[in-house]
Length: 243
Ligand SMILES: *Cc1c(COP(=O)(O)O)cnc(C)c1O
Image 1 (cartoon, protein in one colour):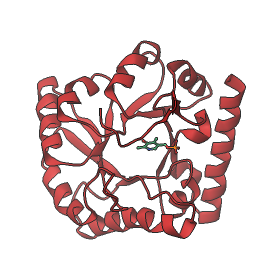
Image 2 (cartoon, rainbow, N blue to C red):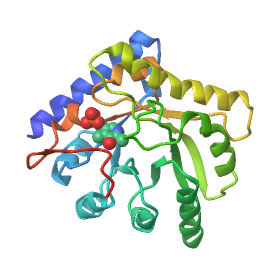
Image 3 (cartoon, rainbow, N blue to C red):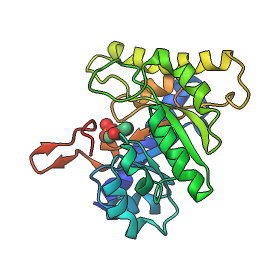
Image 4 (cartoon, protein in one colour):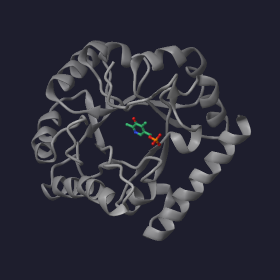
């Protein structure tokens, strides 16, 4: 198990390197986030001991269940799943960044809890760039006004934009939803808003890592290529099932 994870990590880092080379980009501009839903803490620990520093969970319960093992390890925990407002308080016990900010009432609840705790939080705004009904995230055309609004929330540091690209067997079908995230960022840049001139793009998963890097990703979120397929009994994990 250990050797397999380490071997997979080396392969993923090679894929990132190669994709950066192809795109004429510096590989230090692309971070690797371990997507760890359904992965036991012991396996995550192997990746941390191999040098990984960033992980993302989709469910509050998994953050909580793995906390005993992970809390003292040098790993930054992000939340990358759909977040219900009634889970905010608990998620804030474990996560230092929410990548799935997609509505004002969630921003309101974050602001309220963070004010109580007198702290700030990094956030990514999630955008539904594939326009799939099954996916969470803001509609692309709503992102600019949303960002302008939450920029006034003093507890939220807007770090960038996140999307789950359209997955398909055909490469040509996957590119537009990735490219759109970059276009949206460039539109935000063109507004020249102070404090919004360095936004990271969180996109790219096991299937579309190379395409995402070619389209400007700064953070790829990889699960399957590192930890293997996710099976919960007979049921295959569905990222869109809310808690
Ligand atoms: C599961 C998940 C990933 C990783 O997907 P893989 O195909 O396993 O690499 C990335 N981002 C989010 C939001 C996820 O839910």
